[in-house]
Length: 464
Image (cartoon, rainbow, N blue to C red):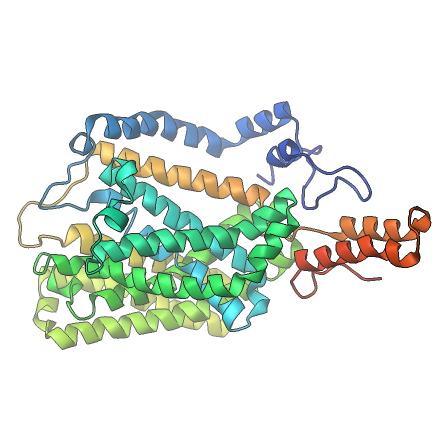
């Protein structure tokens, strides 16, 4: 996109077109300061848009056919293999990769790591979109979206894991929408809404910690409904939920590392200097957390095998596949992260982060699909329609991700200097007021808003 940017393109990062001038309209914000013709021309010049168009041309009709002709038309799932790609990838994989929201929110709001604030919003957005599209994949599997609240309200079963998962995901998704809405309110120019969210940020963060912790483990607890079906190396009645929860922590942090790298390379024009200049430092900090998470995850896997005395399975064919998953997806990234952190090799950290994502995704696939019904000779193979729908929904996820990053102040700070300049002008023009004290009132209001719109150290507008 940086190479495709036209000379007439204006970067919208403040409420006004210029100090003392008119505000940007909503249409101008949506079109990134371009005319409709310029925006369409820009979109047509982007080769990724043509790839997305091809995917949607094939996938959207297939997705519609799933709801018209039923689940059996779209997938080869069965009673023996009930999860399929929609849940094996869309739910069990995307949810742990979206744990970044509560982790960065906890670090910044609870533990006072305000140095991570420039990347916090990216982590929150990653969490929101990951959970939202996990629900979309769930709807593609279940169908009848109007019955989605059924296990939450009508079939009231608080002892069921599905009941817990439904409530946890729904409430946590609401929390994440509220957290991300702060940047949305900045963008549309609604400071009262931003202030309201800012005042309850601590409560939202605490709620996010509780809800995310519970449902990450609850997804693992779902497999306790089918004891004996998952291979013993990937199943532990005592530690299944804990393994899912612990593995989600390095997965979420590594997802932010990978996404921030992609953003810095493909849309550097949208990032501000505070984000770009500190990205390597953020990457190293996140890598430290991911390394500790991987070490804990590896330890818990060994404890679960030792607790259930499953060492003999390591020598089998499935055991070799298990060793591959642990080696490539856990141990090797842990070694690379440790070395890269010590020597500040940011490029190596990003490679290790990608390997960590692969390792966690492979674990979810192994648990839900590959080793499920491991004693059966017939293995699950997804149909082409199932693959097409999965790719289509994930492509929509990428498009929405990009659409939001282009516009909302996620990787850049929304500037309020223009509002402060207008405030000072209003102070100078005291002739319209009965006293100097009356003239200072709008200035105080504007300065208060500007300070709230720039909470980061070093990002607040100058008082001079």
